[in-house]
Length: 82
Image (cartoon, rainbow, N blue to C red):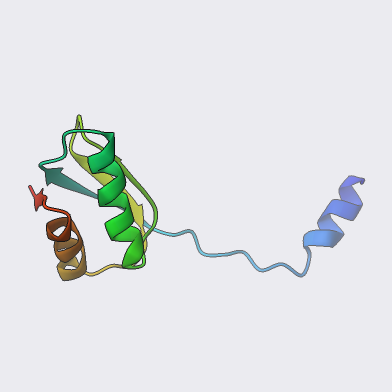
């Protein structure tokens, strides 16, 4: 496929808005299982691409979750927002 064909193939495709990434600090995660539970709790509430790091306590996710939803997700798996 040439460059001209590539442009033609994408001519009708609208650019998707880039999802905003949010970061919160969570206390109480101690291992990889904690990270997975935290990510699952956020994704069950509509977040995407959730990632957690138990060593730093940082959790990132994409999506438009309000603060109350994030706090509830964190508490639902036994952790606390820092």
